[in-house]
Length: 298
Image (cartoon, rainbow, N blue to C red; front, side, top):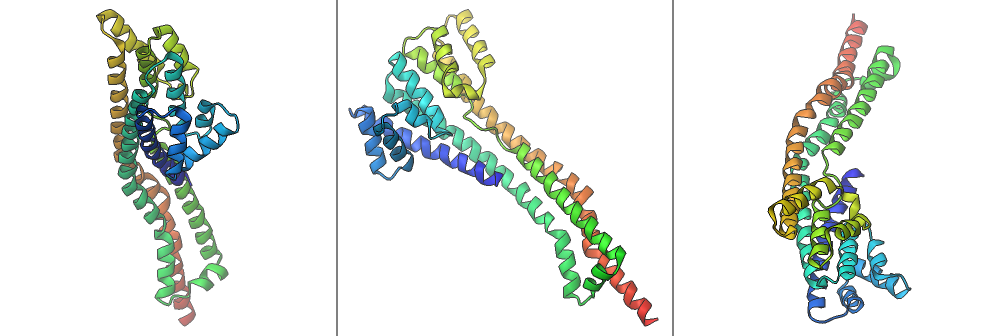
């Protein structure tokens, strides 16, 4: 279920980037915002259709965009800030589309890197049950051993408990290796948008802090970049965008490192839980069956 939610978030970021790029083209061609959204909805974009429906019901356009959640929160924040400070909306949307596309690409890289260790973990979890089925296939009377022999019953119960522990342990490791939600560097991008529209540094920071993008964090890094801009006497916009790009690159590298580390960490539940469960579910019933049949023969 977690894997499905992560995949949906990645796909939504890529879809939002395409939609935002289309909106930028429509606005640059002279369409007013709501008309641009209507044109986008007519192409079959379900998110645009939902936004248009809310806007036509009287909801403010920014709030209608924000209600879509996920990557659309970033678009809502950029839309609100651009319209508040008077920044060129089409140019801002092009920048947001590029940012969302880059973030979705980074998340895809991490998801692909995690696919191999995650698949290996799921395969290993089936190993104990495969050993149990092997006993049935070879003709051993493991059912009577499991049901009628207290030792066999204890082995199966303990093996199943170890399997459940391995599953929970593996799921926790996979969850911890997943990328954090949100778009890295988005706050810095939005501060740059506000500054490009003529807002002061204090007002730009306040607008971003009040926007949905504040959920991403990263204010400390923005303050460092702004301090560098003041000390060096250079415009902050380009420095902020470079910082945002660096944040996305760092997120991509960190995700790949987590995936590499995951391959090693998955060996721990394998040795502690999965292999003992294989012995208890696959090997122990076979040995008990052999010993039982031998004692009966004697």
